[in-house]
Amino acid sequence: YLQRYCNTVSGTYQIIVTNNTSVLHLEIITLSNYIVSFSQLDVSVVSCTPADVPPGVKHSGDCYAVTFNDTVLFPEGGGQPDDKGTVNSIPVLRVLRQGSNAVHYLGQPLEVGCKVHQVVDWSRRFDHMQQHSGQHLLTAIIDCKYGYQTTSWWLGDTYCFIELDGFLGSDDLIKVEKEVNNLIIDNLDVVVEVYSQDDAGAQLARSRGLPGDWEGPVRVVKIKGVDESTCCGTHISRLGQLQVIKLLRSEKGKKGKCNVFFSVGDRVLKGFSECLKREAKLTSLLKGGPEEHCHLLTKIQQSNGMQAKKLTTLLKELAKIEAEKLNNSPKPSYFYEYRKEGNADYINSLLREINSDHSFIICLIVGDSQDNGMLVLDGPPDTILPLGSEICKLMEGKGAAKGSKFQGKVTKFKCIAEIEGMVKQAAQEQ
Image (tube, helix red, strand yellow):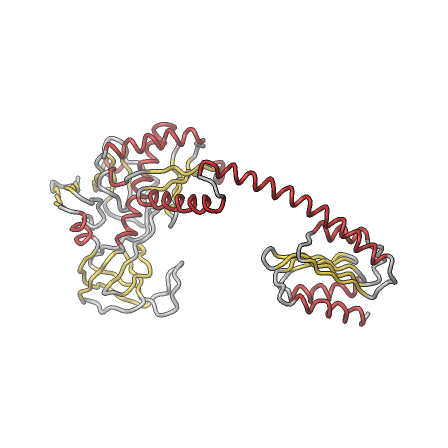
């Protein structure tokens, strides 16, 4: 268990068990040998019982809770998600800790006592090792420089953050980022020591507390000369294996706390590659180099703003013209208009200009499926409420009536040709 949940990627790794005199040395010559040795394991099945599908898992078939005499798959804990992998090529749905046991959830049963082969998803495991060790380093440096404590942290699929009991601004992030990356260059050792719970080594380590159901030794992860923290998670063996830490931003969290977002190692490289791809696309679209992107986008925004103002002015003028036509004609049984390029200002302007006594139906619709649209009805209250509800249902929208006016948002316009017929029929039935 200690070997597979230790940290090493290359070189000599040392686990010190402080409550006896044994010291275990593991010689790992190459990364490829390490992956083969520590990403798979032959074990025996101890128990296998039918179980409910664990939370967060999309699985519609049978489910079994399985324990083994040992495991290479890390169960969820310490803020780190559980490993993905296979057992005899059967996908592992979840791995959860229950007391001192790692319970593996599988979609197929295994015979108790049989030998099976476990394989962990190594690329995902190593990513989690980088993020988790990076979190330990960040927590230690921020505590040392600012005295802020990490109250929780999150390891997500695309980003991580630590929650602090004090706020860090952009200048602070620059200083912290420089210091942690200097320590990565120093390539300090990261070692694991295992203590009994009452040992001074366990008592002095940074800790947010042990799980209430935990019994047994305490695992302390040490960054040489920087930090000592209790932790059950998987870690790298030297800081150089983190490659780089990038602090992304800070923002106010819950109850006056601060969330600092970060990425470590391969995630930073992938993020940088994605930024370069977006930059290349913007260069092609904007017809200008990266140094001109902000300027060119500002010009486009200004131009769009001017065009929007002109459009609003023209729509208001058009609304007046349409209202004059209606006002100078004999009173109709209904008035219907759909204007794709219209907006709320157009509808409001048109309603203000129409001389309506609410005795006939006015139905105005603007927009399209891409940007969604707006529906407004005006007329006899007993007519517009059922009519508005029927139109909203057909156009997959929502709305409500107040007095002689019904207003709603609509999303589907494939049926727009049917709406005038519905309005005409409602007018005939008044």
